[in-house]
Image (cartoon, rainbow, N blue to C red; front, side, top):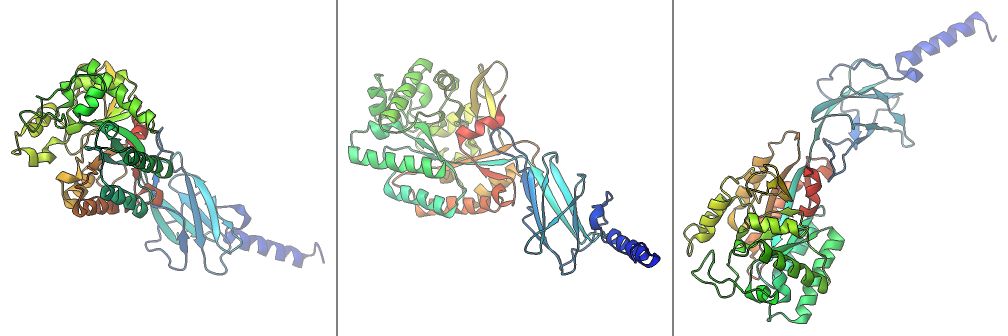
Length: 438
């Protein structure tokens, strides 16, 4: 009978059972104890090991998605993420349990995530997640010649195919459009390829200048030939220091380069690397004058020791003298108006992103991976960190060089943020500027 003593006893018993297994009362506020060893009867899915803390350049990974496959007969699954309020997972149509937890308030560091079933005071699983600022890896190419050659083009396309998250910054030389040996057909082929890399892979087209005479003279300037980093004189202009041109002159070259790019179907450029890394303060001031936002001419000069006794040795000496403090772990800074090596106010609106990984031409794969490790020790990062590396896509780009680049990308891929494996983000020079806004 409804209301009888027997019925009241049954109702009380059901309520007690529901309370014992967590029922509709929701998860307890107290965390369960550490399980010691995760129960293999439960499987965690979707939860990652690493979650990025975002900034103006990179969105944060602030939503944790969790699914749990539980043994038959499990009624409830609850999760405690660090010190956030506990959450009860919802049973899914396939019998699993799932939820999404907002973790935007979790700071830098390692955080434990505990799971318990049916109101147990002992967790069946513990998972540690790490919150970190991004580790930016910038992969760049320097167009030292008018035509990088089809072999180098093919290798770069293969890099994108094998490393889907890869983004590259192509520092393209304007002499592609002024070299008299270049045919109109070949120019168009290169432009078409570059535009495809930009539009398909979100690559960047930046600017690289070796002051070849065919380019300098097409801009209306007299070509300097006596300030070479390699020879007593270079009548081609190729090895002439960029710093041989003063602020006004270099501004003319920048305007001319961007005009050539636009005339031939490319975008105006915003980022720069000097040929031979030979930019000085007047170079960076000219970049600022012309609306550029970033430079990466500051070289980890010790890595080009091959040039110490080559030819005149000037390339090594100049970079050692002008980029003295730049080393393996140098990080971006806003350039002082008074000193290209400091960020003392007042500053130019130019972010200097040191070429701390140099070029693959000068380092072995083991050395390149060691540079990666030197800038990130495997722990969560409190602030964004960059590693800049690159190579010369030239007719002489070898299979050995390709394998070194590919091997390094394999190493970086194992720590990609998009895969929840670490804080690594491939980014272009133009885009990384926002992460270091003054």
